[in-house]
Image (cartoon, rainbow, N blue to C red; front, side, top):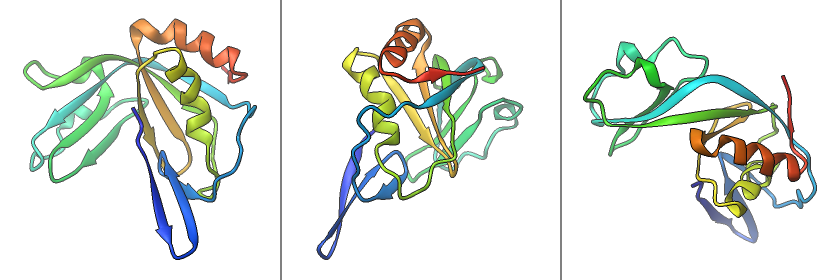
Length: 155
């Protein structure tokens, strides 16, 4: 699940969610357009000092995050060799951006209906947009919840 935190700067309180920082605004009723990214994806965990493996590339969606604790890679499931720790079987939605950094509530308005329906997500933000991964067994349920919330799947 996505975490949010508050940052205080003097008398100004900024909210952070999904990589976007800014003043809180009401996004109730906002309709977002999103795309389905073809393929089955996996979230991999490697040692923090591991080099980025060659097998990670060549995907319609790839994200690499290194922290002191781990090297986390999201890539096509079929690229991952045996023995690599991975959570497999994710489908990927791409929100139609770009979104201004000061705009808030974007990711929350998209994942809120999923959370309300008990659908687990893995969210990733980039400079321009957000990606939401949903386990394969929840994709149909996610599409129904998103449509009911007014979000639109586009080709």
